[in-house]
Image 1: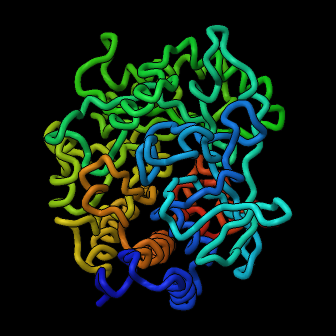
Image 2: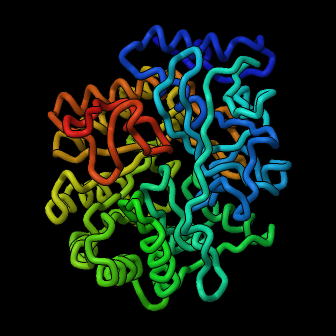
Length: 454
């Protein structure tokens, strides 16, 4: 049985080479998991440090800066990040080459000044990723897109209103920047959406709470005009949960109004996705009627006890069993393939209430995968980043063991194969060296689609 203590639980007193030993041991144990995914998961769960040579010049430079599009995804608050709080790190990095011969791997940036991984320039000014002092890959930075160089009529930046992630594939529209699940008795225990809002406002950064529909359409028009290669293929509408109303609209109508306006202004330009609560079937139908084509009613964590403890607002307002029933009902509206609920991979092992062994955590998570996949629904997951202002981040600064994340990739792919499912739509191409989904490695770990082979 694999326990917490025989895997990772990063301990600064360990020898400098322990992280290298850990990842190479996992590569050997799980040779069918792409080695790119092993390193990517470790960067996502534990973060990466940046030399000043690798930081952006915010919106005035040639590198696309981190937009903080919904959560902080950092291992420190802005005041704790040093230079990275003034000159933003890049939105993502791409890894290639090195001693592990990495295929092109896109990784969302999660800043951790104490990480054993560091992005730095060598004596020739070429950026690389270093682990335990050894260069393990080349590093590419996302170029500043042309559409980020233009502003709305009111002076707001496109990056503030409609940032793009996944190497430009996805326009991420966080149209409600806070959550109405508020306070210790309602907020999800791993989520820093409300704190992220507060810290950006405290730092004097532009961070619009509710984005007017007109501003979203204006930003999308700029993207559409200057994204001549049509790299942006999908948009996601999302934000905090709405338990009452905003501007007289309930959750389905609030988020739906944006989809309706986008589809009327740009018919067929992007695949429309919405991340919202698991709503009653009639509300879900409204999403579909407004033009949304992919629905993400995130179930967060499978285990009943952990859902009740870690998602108290969702348990109080909806309840786990009803949440799952609504997910299944939504497949009747969107089709099972287009219902893609997310879970936060790693919180299953969060102290003090989580599973104490990797075996138990994987068994529980796989039970959830089997439940949904047996109905033709393919969940996806985000690798948990233990943000320090959240209750679980405070008690679990190192997150879950890396072994959990690697075994989850293995279990995820095998469960998909068991039920004859393929990679979900709206996430770009699957396969190592091809995937662009940046906040977990599930797309990197799936086989390349036949029509994408190259």
